[in-house]
Amino acid sequence: MEKKKRLVVSTGAGISAESGITTFRDAGGLWEQYPVMDVASATGFRRNPALIHKFYNERRHQLLLAEPNAAHRALHDLERFYEVYVITQNVDDLHERAGSTHVVHLHGELMKVRSIPHPERVYTLSPDSLDTSVDTRDEYGDPVRPHIVFFEEAVPMMEPAARIASTADIFVVIGTSLNVYPAASLMQYVRPGVPVYYIDPNPAPVPPNVEVIKATATEGMKILARKLGVGVPS
Ligand code: OAD
Image (cartoon, rainbow, N blue to C red):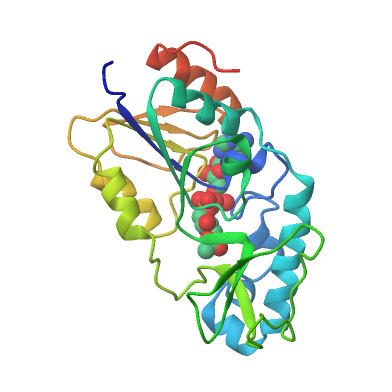
C-alpha cells in the first residue's frame, strides 16, 4: 500500500469557536474581558495566583459543557486519507475528544495541572473535581498550578512542533489570529513548495504562497476537503 502523505494542521481558538468556546482577540473575546497579564502571565501568577486558579477553573467548566464540532471531526476523518498531525495552540481537549490521534499542545492543557516544585509531575483532573486553588496539594503535599504556558514562559513543545511542520506534505492553519509567537512562526518551518491553506473568517495577513479560505472552521473544512479531492467529510 502506498504510504499516506503527511498533513499537518496548526489550529487556534477559532476551531473551537463553533463549540461555544470564547476566542481571545475577537470582539467580546477573553482578553477584552480579562487583563491578559493578570490571568495568563508568569508575573500575574506570582502576584495573584488565586485569580489565575479561578480563571482556569471557569475555563474548565466551560470546556466540560462543550463538544467537538464538525471541524474537529473533519480533521479526524482526514486520517482515512492522510497521516494527520494536529499542532494546537488550544488548551481544550476537543481534538482528542473528536478522535484525532496525534495532537501536540503548544500552550498546555486545561484539564491538567502540575506540581510547582516538580514540573514533571503532571496530573489530569477528573470532571468531578475540576477546581483548583492555592491550597490544592498533590499526592506529595506539593502545590499545583494550571498546566498552561503563561506569557513570559518558554514553549517547550515548539521544538517538536517545528520538526513536525518541517515534515508536512500539506500544511493547514485554522482559526488563529497569528498574533502569538513562537506558534505563529510554525508556517516558516514548512518546506518550500508544500501547499499551505489558511481557514479563517477574518484571516490575518499571510505570505502569497498561502491559499486563504475565508470561512468558519466547519465551512472551511468542507471547502478544504473538496480542494484536496477527498470529498465532504462527515
Ligand atoms: P485569537 O483569539 O487571537 O484568534 C482567533 C481567530 O479565530 C481569529 O483569527 C478569528 O478570525 C478566528 N475565528 C473566529 N471564529 C472562527 C470560526 N468560527 N472558525 C474559524 N476561525 C474563527 O486566538 P489564537 O490565535 O488561537 O495563548 O490565540 C493564540 C493564543 O493567544 C492562545 O493560545 C492563547 C492566547 O493568549 C495563551 O493563553 C498562552
